[in-house]
Amino acid sequence: MNKPEWGDAERPLARHVAIIMDGNGRWAAERGLPRVEGHRQGVETVRRTVQAAMELGITHLTLFSFSSENWSRPQQEIHDLFGLLRRFVRRDLAELHKNGVKIRVIGARTGLEDDILRMLDDAVELTKDNTALNLTIAFNYGARDEIARAAQRIAEDAKVGAIDPSDVTPERFASYLDTAGLPDPDLLIRTSGELRLSNFLLWQLAYSEFVFVDVYWPDFSKELFEAAIAEYQRRSRRFGGTSARSTA
Ligand code: IPE
Ligand code: IPE
Ligand code: MG
Image 1 (tube, rainbow, N blue to C red):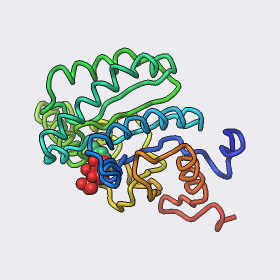
Image 2 (cartoon, rainbow, N blue to C red):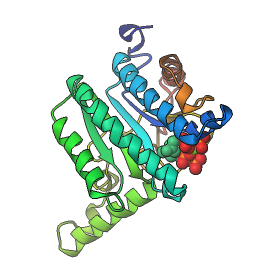
Image 3 (cartoon, rainbow, N blue to C red):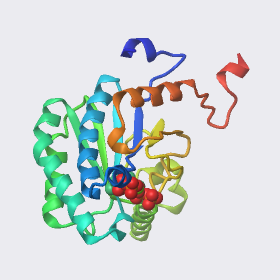
Image 4 (tube, rainbow, N blue to C red):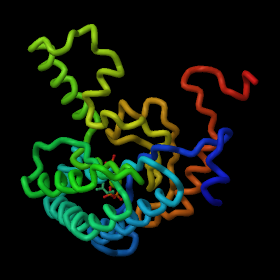
């Protein structure tokens, strides 16, 4: 399977794929390893997946890497996850930049330490003119929090007369979200067999196709990625209308 064969009008290629990278802890537990080993392997899978996305002609990839609810994990695990993020940015940023990856970060800034914020801001700034792949990292992200923050900013703008309540359309609302300007995901993939959204992109996934993959994130591969996209291409997206096939 290569790009030209499977991105056509009949079976459009998924432009934006969002992934809930789940199952690192269980992957480790099954091997009698500490959970951090699963997260370490998970970072390797992130590397492979970014590479695969570029090879598969995907233009937008969004990865859920730390949720606003993940603060309820043991302090040590949170520390390990932040350490891995730091190491990932330090080790991979130059390579990502060289490959034309544009990094964006979504999620709340409050609660994050200054050095993490600075590191993320620097990565965004360095890569801002790149165009090969839009890589969005959802970090300290929760969709209800994102929506509430957007509503707060709209209320503030309304208070000073910068926006009229009647101007708050879905499009205008979306422009206040962390994802402003990004296309909605075409495809959502969640690994590990869990069938839920866990507060990920509630607004943006309104009409996305969902594919649940039954392996833990460390075992996710380019082949499984291709299979998920092939599954997406077999779906008929109707957006509330009738399908192209049934009206033909
Ligand atoms: C996903 O794996 C990584 C994060 C949520 C940070 P988990 O850590 O959730 O692994 P499981 O679901 O407990 O197996
Ligand atoms: C979702 O996974 C968050 C990330 C993948 C970063 P969780 O493992 O936190 O979700 P729940 O707790 O199983 O719903
Ligand atoms: Mg999990």
